[in-house]
Amino acid sequence: MFLLFPNGNSDIRGVAVPGVEGEPVTLTEPVTEAIAAAFSAWLSEKKKVDASKPLKVSVGHDSRISAQVLQVVLFPVVHKSFGYLKPSANNL
Image (cartoon, rainbow, N blue to C red; front, side, top):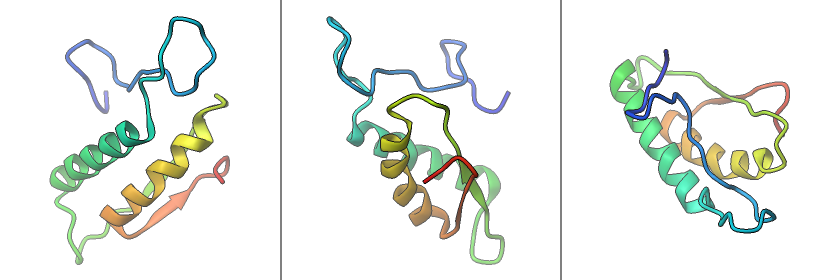
């Protein structure tokens, strides 16, 4: 498994758009930026990324209505960390 959290999940969960009564938005743009920055730092450390060993990162998403909004927030954070970011076919 690529990334495993203490709760046994390998993904990030939250509510990204309003619309369901009683469920507040918890996956906000600042939270998404923080997660992207932390993931980028973790991956850079794990892969020993530096100028002589660049890392290519691809970002994709599923069909949820929040996906593109979150991707727009995530892209610059990851790009800043690695300098190269390859959009996958279903991206912007």
